[in-house]
Image 1: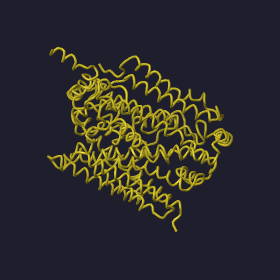
Image 2: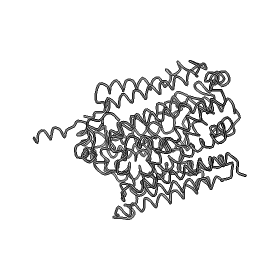
Image 3: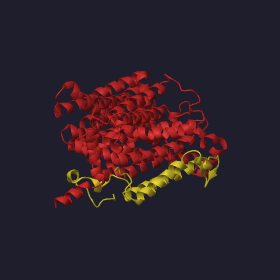
Image 4: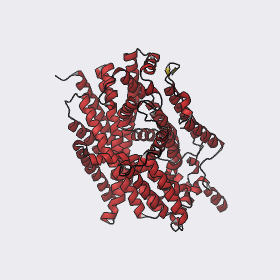
Length: 92
Length: 508
């Protein structure tokens, strides 16, 4: 059985990243498509940057929660011994 | 009398080149003598170094010059696609990259064709993949050299010619790649990546202070009033159509991650934990790096609207609105951007030539002669790239047009290796061949699609044909080549399901 998403956080991260992709593409992106400013910054530019920062947050959260396979605790012992992988990992 | 601009530019570039050579030497000094270490840095790169080498290899002179030029001409719609392709890249790095690392470590793979040739039990497929990657990546080295040559000439006001500038930078790259291979490349990338990240942010802050007194609202109000089409979709030239936007992030999101200089970094990581973290840190670097570029590009549009060469907007804006000494230092960041990609490409193409082709041509070879061949390839390929760049051999330079879209055709094959039990050798060969063929034919306008077709990128059509042919043929033929695929898929499954725990407990 091919396993990519590891846990509940993985499903949440996938859903949030899907929202991000939808938000950055037509037709949803057109909600911000106006030659105006918001908080003194170009509306579409601000929209893109805000969603970009959102995606970084989701990725960091996904990493901290081991959302997707493979991660360090799934390395077979024969390779892990060579690598001296920290099984308690998850943080930098 | 040498002007301040030339003196500062020469001093900065000189110091920068000495620093890269010193770091490159250090990479050689601590490394082991052996082909595996030269090609993959002994599979030892950690989070910090891999973050910088991934990010600075991922984007090239395009990040510092091309992206700003593109925004200058087409508006800010690039952010919608670029931010999505960065995130696609992050997921590929984590989910596919960690699997490539695992089987690479287990079976000692070094190149994409090592993995694909073994998985599908097909030397032909391995060679075809290697050939496409070499042919489409090599011209990019020449393009980076053209970029740095122009920057060198501009920064020194012609005192150092394009030819001498390109030769100098290429020589430095060849020396440290030759010495330390992947380790030297990764370490110098760390310096280059840090330098250009700091440079772009400080440059933008200084420009906004100098030209707009730091008033962001004034900056954006002037743009909205006078250049409305540049801050909205589809841009002044109607570039960002829905079809183009979607196919752009699909092709670059997959294609960039399949280029050999990125692919080799999957093998070079010290563990999947590192790849997992770099998916977040490297992507964060890229996303944040691109934030200030719009200010320089659109500021240039507002203040210097008649630029003959849009790609020169960053140096032009800096020389016009910041102190000359400051602009000269920052422009060196563009050289770092180009070199950090060119060195990785030089290393990757040399690795492919030595690993994928030399053994078949020379027969039984040992590690020492293979290492010698790989290092020799760096010098030879560097020389050829230089000739191509100064002679502007258009045919070869044009090949770079298919670099990302051609590389993206590998992705379905990898999906087959790791995620699809029905994948077959026949399907993989048919899909890959047709995908590359369709991409090339459409890209070079050998055949034009009727206007009724949506305006997807050429490689997107190639990828669609690739996937359909791969799936169709795989379903149609007997899965005779499943032995190797089963071995690899079984090993990955053993890892993801932690099956070794069961065998350990049953042993107990």
